[in-house]
Amino acid sequence: MDVFLDASAWVLPVLLAVLLHEIAHGWMAEKFGDDTARHMGRITLNPLKHIDPMGTVALPTLLWLAHSPILFGSAKPVPVNFSRLNPPRLGMIAVALAGPITNLILAIITGLLLHIETFITPEQAPWLFENLYRCLMLNCVLATFNMIPLLPLDGGRVVYALLRGRAQRLFGRLERIGLGILIALLLIPAMLGYSAIQNALMVPPFWLLQGVMMLTGNGH
Image (cartoon, rainbow, N blue to C red; front, side, top):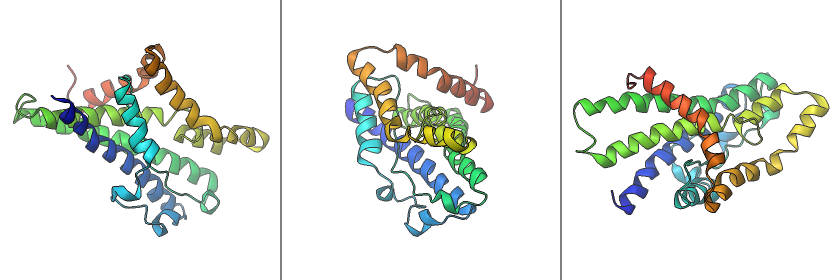
């Protein structure tokens, strides 16, 4: 597969994974009483409403160009007014988990779609199967990476909701630097030719990938 086709086979998996992830956050927030995302037009499949120049375009592209073993991306965060959630603590946890659970569901659906190999082989439709393979892998990565207990990731939101008082306030201060820490872990070692950190981070997504493959009847 040439460079253009290889790059194009990332577009649909990335857009599908990150858009539905964010839509799920907004949809769940609405169920718990906050319709901010609905009023701002963010519960939509229109990619222009969700694309973030850094998270959706620049970061995945840089990781791809750096030959990182991990491709990670994000859409523009869906606005959520956590003070409107009812009950607030359960609402915050549910909103946070909605994104990774959506990615897990997408991974399972993709695993089931791989059974089209019964009718058409990867050799006959390489671009189609590259999209499916990458969609499966990317959703497993997003489902696990977003559960890292670091703000502003979803796992960090869950931890924040469970904490109280001073511990919650101290943990909340990480939100300003959390994304920078994650990008540094993903991008800088790859650019310097060191892959040990990325390989270690890939263990949970690999376990999830293996589980999804077995669940969808693709295990060997």
